[in-house]
Length: 184
Image 1 (spheres, rainbow, N blue to C red):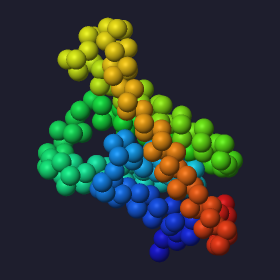
Image 2 (cartoon, one colour; image 1 turned 90 degrees about the vertical axis):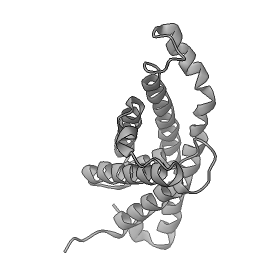
Image 3 (spheres, rainbow, N blue to C red; image 1 turned 45 degrees about the vertical axis):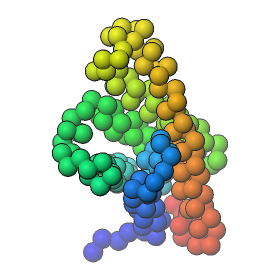
């Protein structure tokens, strides 16, 4: 029988809950994905589990979002898009960031890594969209224009801060009532 700690179970349930929240109506670019990656990296002591849980939640919620909300049942077309791999890579970096401050979790680190992960996501995904987009020339000017056009999408910083506050704050507050949740 596999024994799962209370903290690990809490983290799994929290990540699954916010992943499913992607199906609810929300403001564009106001999603919990980067927050669940940072949260999982910070609180799952087994690094392999942090990556697996994050990518399982991301993949399953992507499938649900694409099939239920967008009626796109050909999910392999979605995965074949170059920008999708940039999305997944940016979240791998976010899990890594979470593991980097695993033993020093505080408001300053959560805020710093939340904003950092948002900016990395924005930089990587827009870079990945640029080469195959006929709206932009395939030179430095085209890349700059791509980033300029993407400025409105940097609003994900607010969503990431909100969801990181929700996830880290909920665990912190729950840990006040049940100290077993915050034990190492």
